[in-house]
Amino acid sequence: MPACPRDNQYSSLPPPGFTDDSLALKRVQLIELLEKVIEKCHRQPQFIEQQSKQTDLLVSIAQFTLLSTPISPDDKRDFLNNIVTIAQDLLTDEIQVNNDEIALSVDSSKRFFY
View 1 (tube, helix red, strand yellow):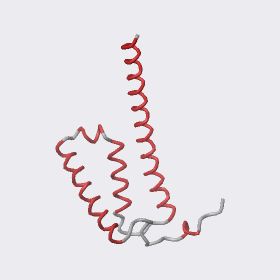
View 2 (spheres, rainbow, N blue to C red; view 1 turned 30 degrees about the vertical axis):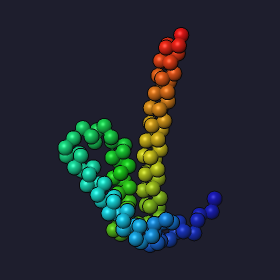
View 3 (cartoon, rainbow, N blue to C red; view 1 turned 90 degrees about the horizontal axis):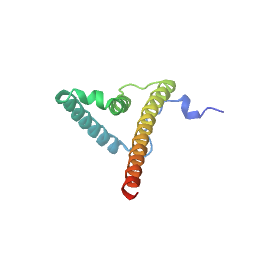
View 4 (cartoon, rainbow, N blue to C red; view 1 turned 90 degrees about the vertical axis):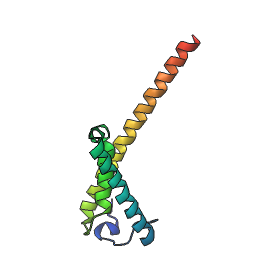
C-alpha cells in the first residue's frame, strides 16, 4: 500500500475541526481536566488503580496534545496507535460490562416471570 504523502511531512496545521481558537480552548479545557484528575488522585489514591485505563488514555492524549516540539511521523503514528489501542480496550471492557448487565437483567426477568 503506498504511503500517504502527508506521512512523510510534519504539518503544523491543526487537524480538521481544530481552528487555532478552538485548539487554544481545547488546551485550556484539557489542562483544567488534568488538574481535576490530579486533585482527585491526591484525594483518592485508589482512583488510579480503579480507573487505570481511563487515566492512561487521558495522560496519553494530554502528552500528545501538549507536545512542545514536532515529532517524526513514525513517532506520531506510534503515539496515536497507543491512544487508539487504549481506547479500544476501554470500549471492549465497556461492551463486556454492558453485555454482562443485560445477561443478568434477562436472567432475573426470566425468574420473575416463570
